[in-house]
Length: 352
Ligand code: 1CP
Image 1 (tube, rainbow, N blue to C red):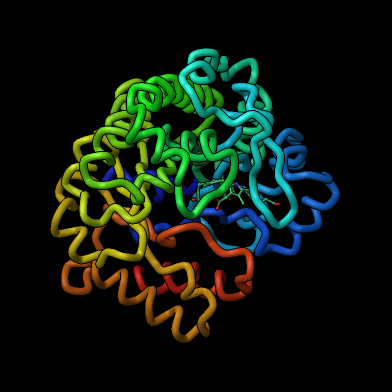
Image 2 (cartoon, protein in one colour; image 1 turned 90 degrees about the vertical axis):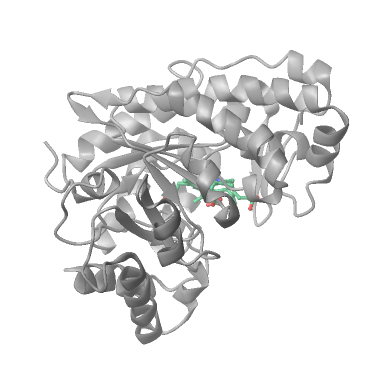
């Protein structure tokens, strides 16, 4: 039994006493206690692969803030790593793949990993976090979208231009489709394994779907997320497993996104919450969407913005279910944790 299931109720549009809140990237570099464990682990991947440390880090933000959900501590790039691309993280540079995938031959030779085997360090972390939470709040499992994973696998690292992946998409769409098909199968298996091991909700991070044209977004990103959602376990022990779909920069395409079948649509800060609610709020619940840079402002300014977003989702000031408060993207490493605390407390205070 969950002691606090308000997050699940809001996702499912059941009655709530207040608006629940969690934060994308809530465990991470902005927390000094995270940086200490990260240093102890040596590298980011050894932290992810050590279930005791991964569990400790996942619980850190819950010890500091009054959050309504925990998220698995891992990364979206675990799947390409399990496919043999040789992932490592250079300090201050982000992810690097030793063996990027850039032609049909490389794509054909990729094997879909068995999550219970090659990714058992992730499912072990899920089990341990779930057990340690002891029913206090729900646990979110997650994966990257096939398109977002493909951008890293083809580019071999983070990019601002997307030169290689977009070049390949326009020149050899069949190569990219084969890659996306394999990734969709891998992600479905991976999320189902997380659900079997205790994840109460899953979120698909489509961080880079919003760099596509509207047509390419449907063909190369949304279509595969829809396929994944159809293949997910949606019930466990008599409880529904909600699915959150977050595409950054997708405000123009909300009506199309709804058709993928997710329970909840995650919004970034480039769309107004009242507009989003009016457009799709009768079909799905919404998550978001404070600009992460507001956490660089004062607690007074942060409280003002929280109030505005809550008001935008409400019925003329009366709080409604169907909204989970979050940032519009992950919390930045340079943010002061006290400001995060001000945001979380303001959400609870203003939505009672
Ligand atoms: O050195 C370090 O400590 C590494 C920093 C770090 C952390 C804390 C990375 C490297 N990943 C993570 C954890 C992580 N990543 C989580 C769990 C933590 C939590 O949410 O509490 C999650 C959900 C992710 C998801 C993730 N990783 C995304 C999708 C969400 C998003 O922010 O857009 C993406 C794109 C990644 C790739 C990645 N991993 C790490 C970095 C620095 C990056 C981004 C690189 C880039 O900007 O292209």
